[in-house]
Length: 366
Image 1 (spheres, rainbow, N blue to C red):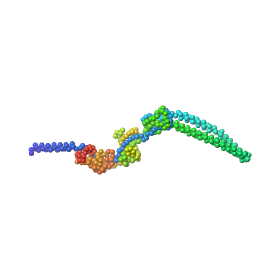
Image 2 (cartoon, one colour):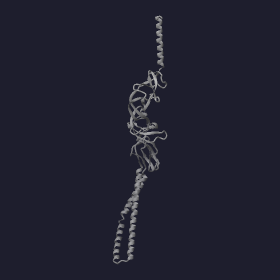
Image 3 (spheres, helix red, strand yellow):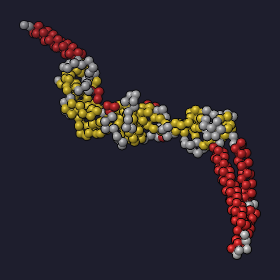
Image 4 (cartoon, rainbow, N blue to C red):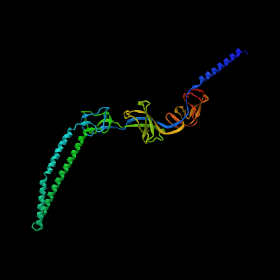
């Protein structure tokens, strides 16, 4: 064979080999990979977060009358102890004035009872004289019996009159206290800090006792975390949490579980934990929502892989340029990573993305 033919054959073989290599490269699946590492595994469960007012209440009036002033503003703030609404007190003020005058008159009448006291004293001294005469035999028995009877009736009449007037005075003074208490109730004070969400009564309106005046959201806020029943085991007070509120994008807030409610919602079987989170109070608003990661425990110095690499209890590892479906024993699961107890070693390459169409043994490139 001539040297020219030999050269042509070598070139053809090289071209065929290159084509096969190029075909093989183009046929391989493109994937993303990561190296298996030793790290701290975090046993975390997800939760849905909502921020709400601790409670809402209806502001009511105990007194009836016409509203003459109100500082209630829809969406406005009220502060505990602040006067926020005034009911016309005129009728009550008139009744109080009349009753006070009657009490003063009665007290004056009681002060004039000194004559009756003196009369009783005279009657008592006269009876004592007649008793001495009777004992000396100088006064008839029938007469002393009559005088004793008359003195008893006179004394009981005076005592009854005094008790009746004292009871009348007590009753009037109690009535005065009730009227003055009602007068105090014509001024409505904010029972706590809050935000007015609905107003029912405006100046000029006539209201009755017990009428609702406004609906108020308490400014005290509660951060609730809703946890699925299958994730609830081990959730307890004091566990650390990381919270992301949708309004603030990817900004994360640290916190802890303050309290765990012992029963689940009947509708969706979710348990509720109340959270304390480290956030500027001005940023914490009722109606915010988001998600939380509740950390139940941490396991240091263990093999962890990205959660997205897991396919059931398998991962795709790379061996000799091929995807190998490898069984693994999974430990604790976090939001982004999982612990692998068996099946992988530090330094192994695993596929983290692009494995949806892979089959065991498929060639891969990365």
